[in-house]
Image (cartoon, rainbow, N blue to C red; front, side):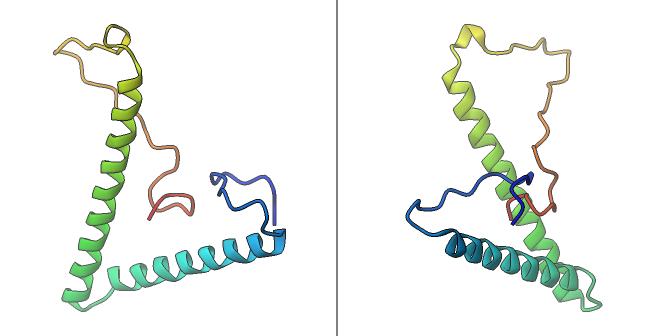
Length: 110
């Protein structure tokens, strides 16, 4: 398995040997691939109900990602004293940080 990858490290118990860790990562990867393939099939389906269900699932996943981003942002801002936090005049648009991995990439959360 290549050592230099862009996905975050997955912390597994130290007492597991490397073959067990590798097998677990392969199972997770295959499960993700199966989900992506199924979602792609449903999104391109001619059946309206199936296509709408896929769009609903995609919207729910996007909402979950946004909630997680807000939770992380709020936790980080809570660590910074109030006088050191960024303050913006009401006329300027706020800067929105971009996620580290684009949505839909293999490293993005489902």
